[in-house]
Length: 144
Image (tube, rainbow, N blue to C red; front, side, top):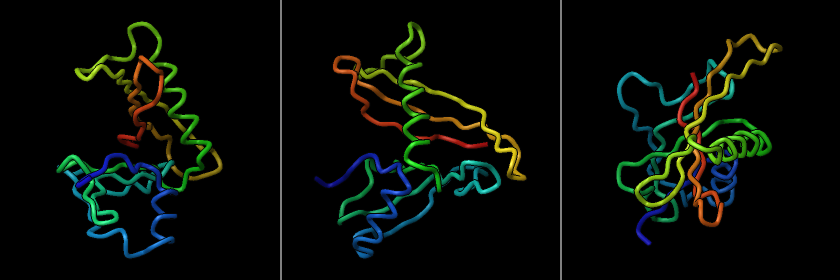
């Protein structure tokens, strides 16, 4: 394969970097407009526009990027994405795309009183195959 999809989990990205630092190359942030590549003034921390080569293969399709929460636990990620998948299964919520997959856009407000950061609105997307109910992909799209 000449390209790959996915790679939206900061912890997996970190493990891959630690396992073999030379396998991830050409790391860059390609952002559009005035949106920052790293959102550090909200929780959860968030990166957008990440492009790279991994094991000699480009992030695909050409021009696509990875977005990921930074510093979140796997339990947090799974909880957010699972809730979005379940919400998308409700009648009239998830949208069936041209390839037959159910696409759901979700939003959630988060506030951590112990931190001095303002409330965050996190936005994320899940894609599910409605035939076998398997998640194709799930990733954050914005934190503001």
